[in-house]
Amino acid sequence: MVEAASRGTGVTSRPTPFTYTSKVNFDELDALGILRSSRYSVHVERATAAFLEYRGFRWDAARTLNPDWYHTTCHFEICVDEPFTGPGCLAVTLRLARIGETTCRYDYTCSGEDGTLYAHGSRTVARLDRHTLRRTAWTERWIEVHRSGLAASDWLSGPPPRPQR
Image (cartoon, rainbow, N blue to C red; front, side, top):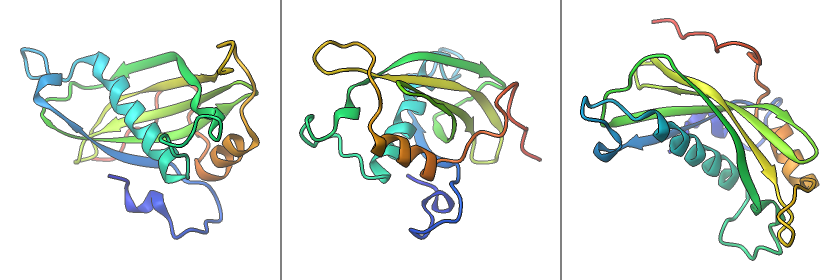
């Protein structure tokens, strides 16, 4: 589910962070009922896919029509701030940290419904040539969608600001 504030009305004066509500299932928890740290990457990837789909990237389209489909995660960093006990829902918020010629880095936070910050970090993806599997440049469409539709991170170093409780 995409947060209403992130969807906007179609015309915005500036990009905003993108928030996606991701369901945490029982099988993602350890014996103590805590979300396994490796599972955060899945929820961040779901949020990224939802952002791209919202911005018009169709993953079921012919791959020749969507060359940016060929990308892979090349770096994932996480800091678990507090244990998430579930099942339940995580609000995953994405911000654009950097977009380069061949890579794109997102900063993210994972929060609970009450605003508790459970984890934060970054995820970097690299575009690949579909024939050689070597890094290659993003399309102009990819760059524009990210620059116009995803707010730049205002906390590029260190943890994001903690929400007020």
